[in-house]
Length: 442
Image (tube, rainbow, N blue to C red; front, side, top):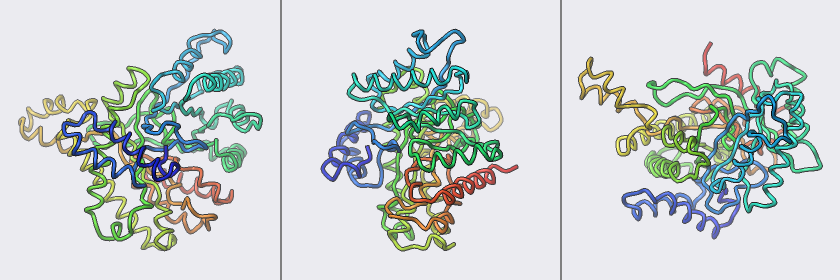
């Protein structure tokens, strides 16, 4: 739940409940509980909200998320009661699922049977919502060029029902198909349940690990990621930070990041993941998406000029410091608790020891071994003010180069696009894609 939606009393209750969860594994819980409560009861940090019409229902939701590819056997049909529909039903019914949002890639369904399967999945969601107190947020995803893309779009836009949330992966081929691109822009601009997610590799924090091949979309963060991986989403909202702390000080930044990263690391352990496979991935890779939001609101609140290069330079310098501090805190926490296990740091030390000696090899690996696999996440929507009645958008788009600072480019926060006209919304998407391509080189 976004604390801003629940009032001061509800925010404090939310903070206390979440802090109590976060200190369960601490050796000194009373020391950290106060820090966590103060941080969470403000508006600066909290679990990443589900960016659709309704927030997470529980008062102490943890923003866990995962995605999987729906595998339909050649002889399965929606009415056969086969393993594919059973697996989906199990996902919805998991007792810990209030903490975890579900992304489902539907590209494994053959186009001829896509409509029937989609109807069955939507019926299952509605059926479960009638018998369960809470049903986890669900996002369906496809490549934009998939033959069944228009079938999915039609289901989302059906005025007769609530419709599922849908995320469509957009790549260079999508931009070349002008008719499809125009249809996607128009549909997603007017419908908050449709998101366009730009394809791109996720960069690991350390050169000791290679990139992973993304093939699904994370339902909260709205970025591409490998299937069957578990992530925690945390929100660092800059809109409540005083301008002087952006312009001059780093002490507030260091404290904010130190407590925030520790809080997030504790919550990774606290999420009730719906399967043993996801729990193992969460603990082995400790994937954290630290979303920075509220940049546009910060600029608006302090009367800065978004079209000024000095504003861009100020924010770029601060975000770069924020990114470095995230990594420093992840490395510091790794020295205390160990790097993320999938890195196999001890094996790397043994491999380097014959050449550098054990002591120097440990020093080399320690300096490159963070506690988390990924960290800073930025969305192009974060440069737009959420609290304005209307946006003269073009000058705000001058802040888009900020997204190149991120480890992960996301499309979270897309509700603000309703303040843009269609032409500026398309300009935002095209400009972000160009920045993403430029950052990846030839």
